[in-house]
Image (cartoon, rainbow, N blue to C red):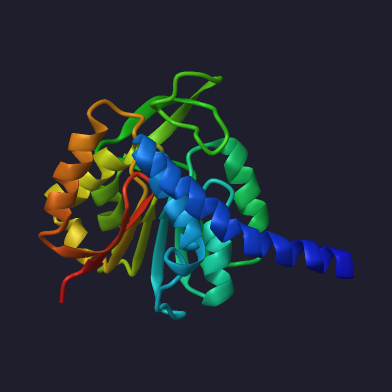
Length: 231
């Protein structure tokens, strides 16, 4: 037991230096994605940013790209919020249903969101499963137009909107902006991806539009970015 505690403390001491070194190295050689990723881990972004929200039992959280439910499980450990979780892959739906089977405040939707209704082929690749993949087994999944589905729920606003869907975020955000739904979201955390053509210009264009209604709270490009609704 003491040995395990010692090992953990040693890792905790070494980790910041490791991430700090990697951040500086990748910044110097020009790999901005890896630089931002290591900066994110250096400052414990998963813990200090993604989970740092004022939520209550009345809050509504949307997790777009639920995967295996790790993020929502962490959020629920902080506050018993109401959750709508979206995941189009049957394999992961089984994991989610089992994980949240005793929690009536978690609603699981077995489809993805986009700017249209339809079906598309995804390439299976663990947490990188995507319409924009290049390898892996193909699977047909259902997508629904985000704004229309939110309208059908009869909800007025969303307290926390977490979006991580491996390239599909561009079409979802475009739909939310055009429909006016963006202004009903109090806080968004978005992971943009470089898996689609012209991802840099698409990201910049969307952020410019997002900032008409929201202010940036943190920015680690193509890692995670946060936006709060302007008062």
